[in-house]
Image 1 (cartoon, rainbow, N blue to C red):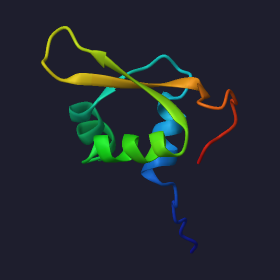
Image 2 (tube, rainbow, N blue to C red):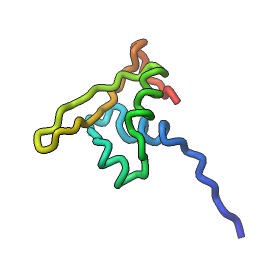
Image 3 (cartoon, rainbow, N blue to C red):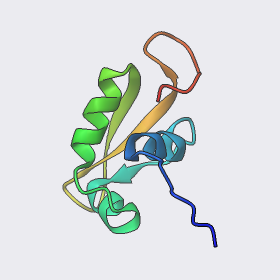
Length: 81
């Protein structure tokens, strides 16, 4: 019997989910849906790698939602992670 190990990092998963898709994600959604407990830390690491991360205020709650633009700070569209 063979088992598969998933070695996808949270940063790569978040980049795939958010980058260029026009979706937003709050920290509560990230924790409940995907198990990411510290979204701000993951986004800070991704910002340091050169991704454009935007913050969008939500209408119903006092927290913010985050999105990642398709292009990075250098103008490229390739995978950063």
